[in-house]
Image 1 (tube, rainbow, N blue to C red):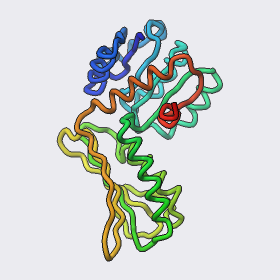
Image 2: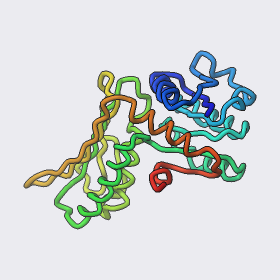
Image 3: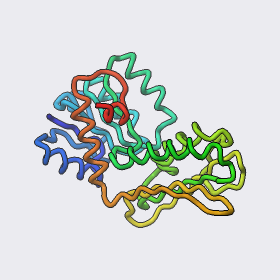
Image 4: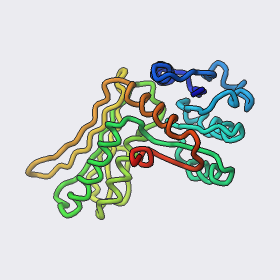
Length: 238
């Protein structure tokens, strides 16, 4: 499989290593130095593109993949205000988009635990939930895309919570998300339910970027030959 990597930073380089270890070849890499020169013809060299750039570039890169008729796997977060527009464009043009806020298999298992725990806690309003997410200082968006996915799952299950806020809160209708940027932390997400009597927590610690990169490459392998909009739930069903 021939892969174009759009966003050749730390994550892009790990994706390259994982892809090559699985027998794939990298035919194009785009970073901040050559992003302005990216052309549709360049993308046509690839069977699939993996997009891990920055929020300001993501949507443009996705549309260029659509123009080149190249399936695209997107891991960049911070552009989700455009997600529904991009999905509609993908469907209209009969293209292929795979989006996830997090490609780690472990994180996606954590999502399942989070959703189930929230469902259990809906009848116990004495427990107040809070999310904490910690990432490296280079991360551009806050809260993280993963934290937002976690928050949406909780909001869908807890009748008392109406919205999330990016701070700790005592408002019973709000779900607090605390965002921290520390050193080179790859990603840590914790959900805690606190009451006066006790507390319950679940945490996912990423030790490095390999879990995210491996999941993205597996998603790229899976996406070949498919049309439409997909995510990790679709991949994990198979």
